[in-house]
Image (cartoon, rainbow, N blue to C red; front, side, top):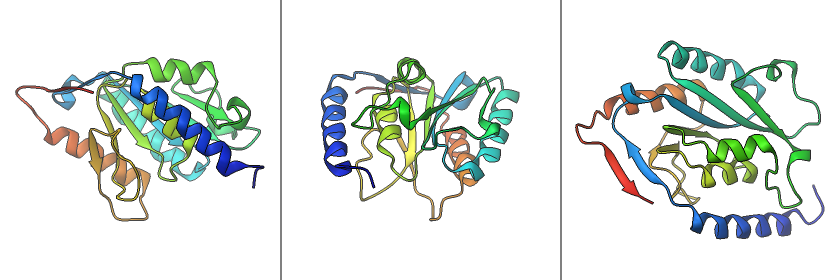
Amino acid sequence: MELFEDTRLKIGYSILSKKSVRVKRKVFYSNISLVKTIGIVWDSAKTEDFSSLSRFYQKMHDRNIDVKIIGYYPGKELPDQYTALRYLSCIRKKETNMFYIPVSTETDVFIKTRFDILIDINFGKLFTLWYITSLSSASFKVGLFDPESDSSNFDLMMEIKKPVQVENYLTQVIHYLEMINATSAIQVEK
């Protein structure tokens, strides 16, 4: 356990709360056929999920959808499978400040990128990843429903029986996005 971890997290959440108030984004979604970009926020400590994400990346690539994944990896050295992939960036502990806020260039670029869809795969509710999801400029955010935590960042919430399998979760996300075939797009100011 890290020194003063609870206090540092409380300060991190306070900073995030102040920044979140200033975030203005237009919620927009019409149907999956118009999607060109997807951003994914992922707990990359779960190395067993990497193959599911790779398959998802390939499926979306086959649909001409560009996918970018940003993950948080708590170890010092990234696993070999995470390196040299154009679509995957991993933040390590040394790329966060003392309040667990990511301070890397990749994070800034990811947050500012206006993805058509952002998919949150932060099932462990890691603050570093929640920070990215909360401040993301994405047009439409999808996440897991959790009655015990604040889910106000999400425009679509999925309720899936636990333990949640990443492959099943991603399949369900795409299934429900395909079901939304709005003749007039969903558009809301947030």
